[in-house]
Image (cartoon, rainbow, N blue to C red; front, side, top):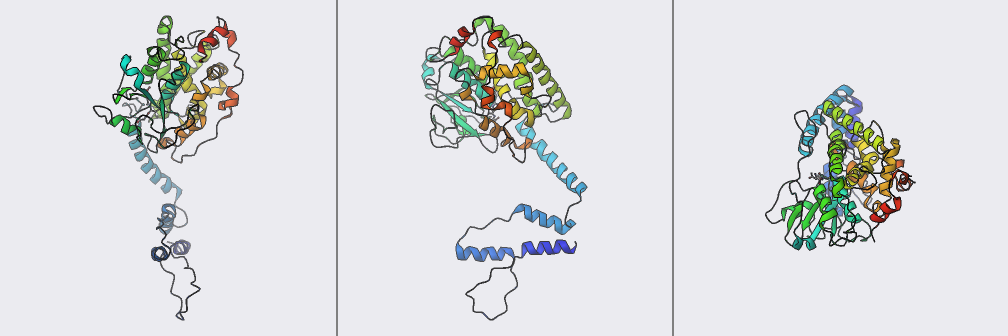
Length: 420
Ligand SMILES: N[C@@H](CCC(=O)N[C@@H](CS)C(=O)NCC(=O)O)C(=O)O
């Protein structure tokens, strides 16, 4: 221990007490008292709550006491690295399950439904979170089919531990998609909603989730099943029943695209971000960018994935693309290129963004917050970068000039997509 460290330490632990102007005592002033005593006295006089000691300055003081003004960098780094690696692996193993090669493996959804009995169709309620790409799919199809009146939505926000919470008590403007209270059950967390289902449940409480409000039942928590249901299972309630985003003739093509896009792009970005070994990351990032290159080429010739018509496959690709430069490029280390560097993919994304009702489902601020502020193991400082230029609303409104790729009359496709 050297003198500097002692004087620094003592000045932070023994601050000079304030002079009492009313004191008539002729005794010499008492030596400065330890901090703890001073806080206690102040508290009893002014009834202020106790201030917890600042852990950073306490730690700084202890290290200064042991090692002088600064810790040897080698020791500092190796100590923190060992502690961080252990905690990081522990957190990741719970939050992002992996296989033996430490590659991320997404757990399967527990509640699957391909159809909903007619008598249950009038008590549907959708739970979503705005940062989530899987939930975003359901909001887009709900909007395009004109199901917003028939399927009310509760919008949760991410909590600090990554679970979903209802943080607001007011009802936002119904025309904008902002976080809401739990409108179907009045709970504070999504976990409570899942738990309250007939039969109980204590597993992963994910969004999107389709709820049967009358029978208190989770109908489905798999996004693809939900968008298929919204597309063709609720036409009697839809304002745009004529729109078919999965026509029988295109189903095989849609499935083929989904089988490429889901593992390599939709889940591919998560495989990059949640990889727990270099090897697992290398595989994931190559799969991702090789697929984006193929898509870039395909979309230079076709307006949408399956040709002239927007399908469910496009909806699924879009919700990953719109988050790419906002979050995945930086936070998930999807760094070979930014989406804005792919002219066809970016124009395709703008094309879909400009379809009436789609832009309203995108909340860039909440998407960024949801990723940078909640995925603690990937961003411990919680610092949120600024929105990248190519991802701003104005930029996405730029002409896409993709109508010329359509074989059919562009007005025909536009008419099919417009919801009254
Ligand atoms: N396969 C599901 C994935 C849903 C999912 O993983 N949602 C995430 C948000 S992006 C979630 O709610 N995670 C909370 C948790 O795992 O507890 C789907 O497509 O619906």
